[in-house]
Structure formats: structure tokens, C-alpha cells
Image 1 (cartoon, rainbow, N blue to C red):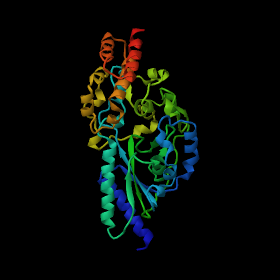
Image 2 (image 1 turned 45 degrees about the vertical axis):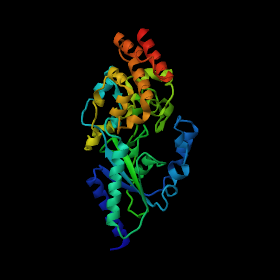
Image 3 (image 1 turned 180 degrees about the vertical axis):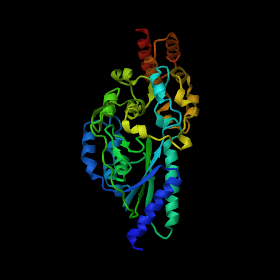
Image 4 (image 1 turned 90 degrees about the vertical axis):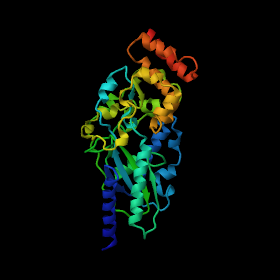
Length: 353
């Protein structure tokens, strides 16, 4: 058997093992992603990354994976569905007394879940190739890795106009993870773009953050404002945020391709602590100790307690006018940060005017 057939056989095995470890799809790409460098540079120069300053750094590693992991030849990209079993997403979003939390954070922190699976896949590969020395390293949204570009080259989908990866058979409700490897694996064919003339995601965005097809201004994005942004949420975006207290899924909810989205088979992604049905008032009453306990092992923990209260205060300000809500808001005015106080006062004003 010649080398090409040997590496084709190993590549096929990797995809089988990936499914055995719980991934929904595996694709292989080379490391040439320079085609996306100009658009990325232009995006950064325009300041669309907001205060995510880390996105400016390590460009040499982003566009040349060998600078991140020496001798890298191919990338194994893995896809894992995360949409939870309970289908009450629109109901919660439309109930302005409920706290809407982005579907990807309802369960266990995806970083831990995917990293664990990638490590198992890497170990299996090393056991299979025990007589071959090779470099490898796993990633999942934790390093200067352009995961969408790599996944697109690996045939896992195409970048949608909302900037997320789309898959014809699975929509966009999935996570990505990567294994950089120095093995000469057989690469997959890049997926074509199937967005066509559709503009559903652009039209639905509450803050008009998708300023053009495939171009997102993070400064306006609700996911950025409620997660990455640590300061005072600009007044003009507080009403459009509505009851979205952690992230936003609107662009995915309206995407026609998501009618093909699959419910996750990963139990760790099922909603915990009733996070898919929390009231805004109950969310605001959570103490700091309770916050740390409830969100232990969740991606939500990283925003911290103050930012949680800030976001909930905005949600309460957008809830139907209620003396009960005013009372709950006022109960938090003392013994809290100036950041939270400012958002509480805004919310109270919304109910009194």
C-alpha cells in the first residue's frame, strides 16, 4: 500500500473515532488560510472588535498555524451540536418577564466538554501511530486559531452573513474544536456558500450589528455587550437588548438553514439549574455565593457577578411596568457597584416614566 492510501485510511479512521467520542462531524484541512487575512485586517482597522483587544494580537499565529504549533501540516476540525432538548426558546425570548440566556451556555462549559473529547481523539491517534512521532495540540476557542476559516476549508460548512459557520444539514447550532497536527492527512473539499440573497439575519438583528453581509460590528452586538463588554452599556442599546441577559441568538433563530438543526446528543449541554426558564426577578435576587454555585462549570461564570446584575437590571428595565420590579430593583441600590447602580437607576426610570 502506497503512502497516499495509508494516510487516506488513517484519515477515515479519525472520522470514525470522532463519532465514537461524540462528535457530530470531523473534517480535515490544510493550513493555508491567507485568503481571509485582508478582510480580517480591515475588520480590525475599522475597530469592529470593540474592546476585545486580544483579537489584534498574534496575527502571525492566526494566519500561519506553524507559528503556533511547529511543523503543523493539517488541522482536524470537529463539530458538536449543542441545541438543547427543551424547545421553548422563542417562548422564553417573547416573555419579557423571563431571562433569556443564549442556548450555548445553558449546560456545562463547552470548552471543557470539547477539549476532553479532542484529547481522547488525540490519544487514540497516538496509540494507533505509536511508531510515528508527530506534533499535535488541541484547541477550542482558547487560542489564536481562526476556527471558522479552518472548518470551512475542512468542509464542515460555510461562513454565513452573520459570521457564524453554517452547515446544510445542521444549521449553526454547534461548537467547533481543532487538533493541529504534523501528519500529512488527506484534506476535505471546501464547502460552497449557500446563503444566496437571504438577509434574514441582517434584518432581524435588534441592534443592527450586522452592518453588511459577513461583517459584524461587535460594538453593537448584544452578545458582545452582555458578555465581553465590561463597562456601562450604551443607552441606545439597552431597549433593543430586551430580556437577553447573556448573549443573543436572534440571527440563528431566523436562519432558514436552522430548520435542519439537530438536538444535541451531548447530555452535558442540556439546561442546568432551570436556566432555560428563569424569571428576571429571581435572577436578580441571586446572591454572589449562589451565583458562583449555580454557574460553577458554566461559561457564564466568567462574566462575574457585577456584570450579571448589570445585565439583569437592563432586562428588568425592559420588562412590563410593575411596582414589584421597582421594589426589587431598589433593594439592590445599596451595597453594589457604581456600574450596577447606574443600570438599576435606568431601569427604575423606565418603570416610572
